[in-house]
Image (cartoon, rainbow, N blue to C red; front, top):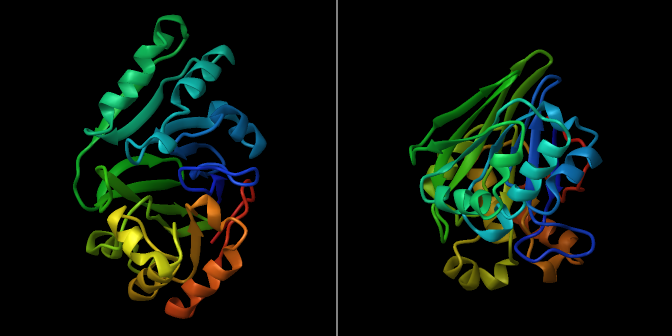
Length: 260
């Protein structure tokens, strides 16, 4: 059940870590989650075929999660893409996606279509069925309307469940989505000593991410979306999460292939 991190940082990147974004894929299809940096280059760096990318899910409208869309759309067209690129997002995110695409009249020049699909803010909504896996969404608690994702791989030998929190404070809807997952990818923007700041920004601390993992009964916790000042203290953040969780906690490497 392969997935890779194209970035693991919060809103401000560092030389070693870019803004958080992911790719989930099977042998036949790639789905991107959020779109920062130079997405086309990241797809290549991950060893994936850009033409296998069928879809992009944008979790919310904050800059660090969607600013790479014009670059992705432009590069896909220049590389000769002919098949439609499907982009999924909440209604509150759509004006920002259209604004980016309209800023550069890409579709007038590109030899393919970009089709926008609105995700309703419903718990457990099936966003898409890909080849070998499906993706469900659930609203979570953040400063802008946002969704967490549950990726269910269902083709042998790739079976299992990965849940991605996106940016959020701990909330019941995420806990329900993550119940019993093999892997929980959870944001851990701050140390728990800054829990008040995390709450005011609708983010999560390392310790709180561990609490969510324990309550949801997941098998493995991977942390991401670290504020830049913590990039050289991630072992300590991992220890903080383990204090609450007790299970395996990982700090991800960008462009490493992960499996359940």
